[in-house]
Image (cartoon, rainbow, N blue to C red; front, side, top):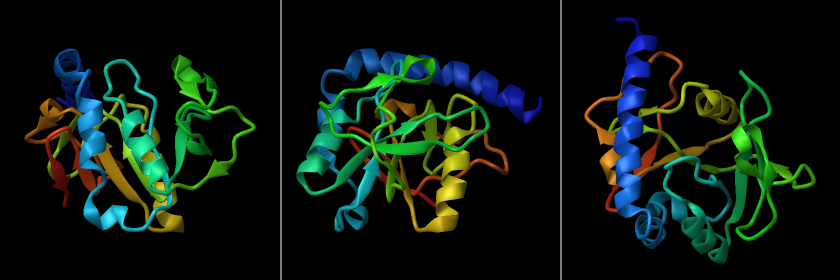
Length: 191
């Protein structure tokens, strides 16, 4: 079986696992993420951090973004600009207005300042402890991390329910590894 077929099958199974975890934990896991905070090596110097508005059954990063904003971080959200393109990021604070973006995912308006984050909170379907993730197949975060990492040091943190961890995620040569994975019960240093 080729890698694309393996990933497609893995995505279907992982989406089911994530949906079940979301139903069980959606009411307390986002607050537990905020209580955990960022890994110590990352949280010592506030900069710009990009979170995400939950899509489907993704865990919410809003409580964590609120906590980080109060600690001096500037918060942003990703914006899909086109197929095959890296994401761009616009400043946004929880509570500010959003507009519908691609797939109706809420994004900051075009008037919001575009920034290059220092830390990215990265959504996905499943993750392994080596730092690889399986997303939806568009390659947006892989292209974005490759681009940002050529310009400056960038920390990528997968954010998930603990149930989303897998022994190994199918991966190809263009899949960008994460530095950490943050769940409601554990912070994993990858690599």
